[in-house]
Amino acid sequence: MNYTIREIKSMEYPLLNDFLYEAIFIPQGVDPPPKSIINNAELQVYVKDFGKKPDDRCLVADVDGKIVGAVWVRIMADYGHIDDETPSFAISLYKEYRGHGIGTTLMVKMLELLRKSGYKKASLAVQKENYAVKMYKKVGFEIVGENEEEYIMVCDLRRERSV
Image (cartoon, rainbow, N blue to C red; front, top):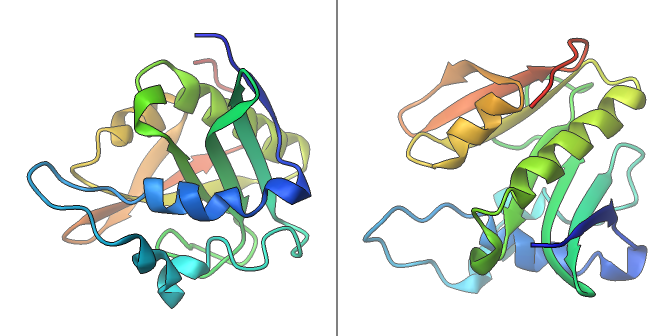
């Protein structure tokens, strides 16, 4: 599958609401929540006023002029928050574009961008059942904490890695 990874354009920021919904992990056999769930404050922290904070960064995957995935980071008090200097990740792709390596490429490119920008580490939270845990480990994230449902993972950006 041919795709390009590029920085999001400000006029495309509203798409982050769609990708926020797509990022919600839905275990097998569970009905998806209504799309309105993204209006909850604990989820809006990922997208509200995106682009207005100095640490907001977003890359998108583009297939034939259609944005099919996004990875974005910001320093925020989200589920994966570890400190006020570490950007937290959010990533998702439309279902039909998963399993083609696009997510891995988005993650690697964002980690490179953060490394070049001088960040020391990046974090994320992921549900233990989520198949993406394997990919996060592959690109350099390590589990540093957990609760009943989620892992808190951190990537040390000072270490070079090859995927």
